[in-house]
Each structure stands twice: as C-alpha cells, then as structure tokens.
Image (cartoon, rainbow, N blue to C red):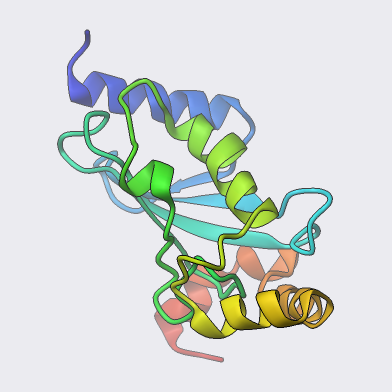
Length: 164
C-alpha cells in the first residue's frame, strides 16, 4: 500500500479527471473546494454547491471532513456551518473509499435519501416528515437563492470581501 500522501495525490487527481472542478486552498493537498451539482430526480437538481474538503493527515485511513460552503436546506446538513452528518463519512469510512466515491455516491445518496431521524437541521427534518411538498418547496427556494451555478464561481470573492 502506498503512503497516505501518495494516496491523497492519486485520489485528488482521480477526482479532477472525473470532471469535477477542484480549487486548492493552499500549497498542500489537504484542503480544497469541489463544485458539486445537485443530483437528478431530486429537488436539489439544478443547484450547484461549493463543498469544502479537508483531508486529515491519516487519510485514507481516516475520513475526509466535508461541508457545504453555500447554504442548503437538508435535515442532515447544519444550516449555519454546512457540516454534513453522513454515516459513511463519519463512522463507516474505509480506506477502500476515495474522493470520487464521496462526490458520485455518498453526497448524491444523502441528497436523494435524507435521514430525518438523525438531523443536524431539526426544522428541515420536522418539515420533511410533516409535509414533504412544503419541504421540497423550501429546498427549491434555498437552491434558487444560494446555489445558482453563476454564484458558486464567485463564492470565494463574496466571502473574502464580506459583500452580500
């Protein structure tokens, strides 16, 4: 098995080769942003989110930390911090998984099949269980307001200059 830094490099290259827009945060390969499109057949479809990824020193033996930079309305995502409650990432991570799995399987599955019984956003979970149609309308409202494709490209400038 190759060293963690080699594996990190390989996984990052694989992610870039899979047509994901990746933006490095600094000279190292431990922190970066990935542009993520909402999955088809979900109320998130058409939205684009900027995902912050941090790879721990022990990656791939320890899971990456991921969070949404722009707001998303979802029971398993903290609305303020963007932190993701994702069992596979947080509890059942294995070195057999890679970054492409995160963006092609885990995140789309999370958005397609939210788990309202283990929420980080209690309001979204309650609304989803009480009124699915109203929940999906709220998701679309957030998508329109915070996840327009043209806004994601400029998200870093907006954040750094504190303009809103």
